[in-house]
Amino acid sequence: MDKDEKEQRKQILKELREKKQKEFEQSLPIDREVFESLFDYLDNQLEENSCDDTNKLTLEFLVKNKIENIETVLNWFAENGGYCDCEILANVEEKFEN
Image (cartoon, rainbow, N blue to C red; front, side):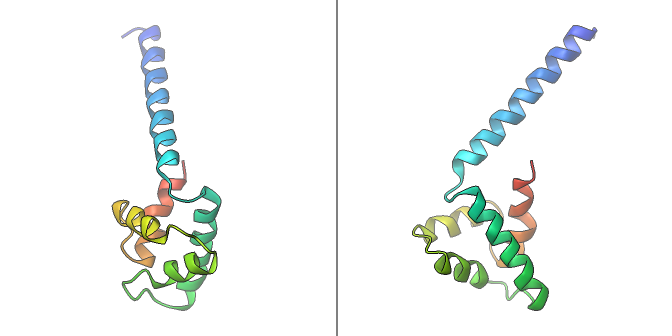
């Protein structure tokens, strides 16, 4: 494989990553900033309390912040590996670190 082929493959991989990131961003049911605030909230809450295997803290946060499509957001979390508060923090937050 010559240098041009390597560069071409790098470029294709870069474009695929960017496309995947764009699709992820478009799939978000609420603004990215709200997610980031939620992750901070969960981080703080879970330092003081252990996870009770529900999404109670997430639900509290969504209600306090007057999020209207709560059911959609909770379903989106479940589809992305977040079935309870600690899984939302562990599995979903990492998807935002691109």
